[in-house]
Image 1 (cartoon, rainbow, N blue to C red):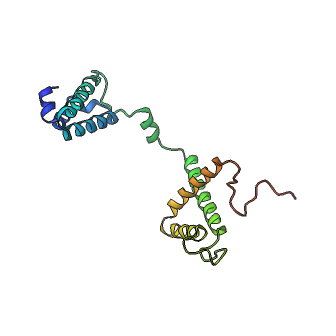
Image 2 (cartoon, one colour; image 1 turned 30 degrees about the vertical axis):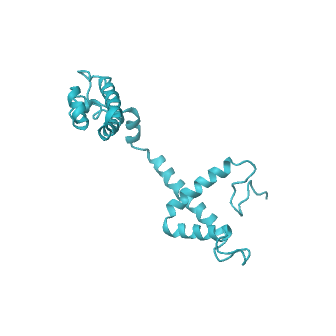
Image 3 (tube, rainbow, N blue to C red; image 1 turned 180 degrees about the vertical axis):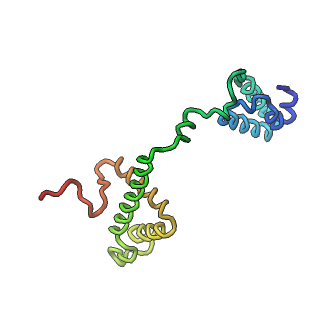
Length: 177
């Protein structure tokens, strides 16, 4: 790569680099970020960034003659993500989603309604007044977000020592006949 072209216009020099098609997307994104930073700077900082960019470009592995570009050969993680899921797993995901929604609805129904404040003199900014109102609004505006929020709160409650994460009205264990 021409050092003069890199100093004049780093972004254009990077786009014209011969190994562009053979570089992993994550590595190429790092190079682009470094190039943008270098293009925005002046003086000694620009020189240091351009030196780092030139070193990283020189360290790029040359493509082998028999290997195809990485764009056409997915990584093992990409192959796993793109693999079709078995129908049993899809059914399990649907059931889990349905049960999570049902459990969330039951927990929200068990929570006190916004108008049922334990004491009328608490005031409008008391948490026992604001939290039920916020939950009711979230339930109307974005039930998916409320579901994720409740899952995160359950996880935090599980990490807190001495606090039960069991919803109000639910009992642990089995009933004896």
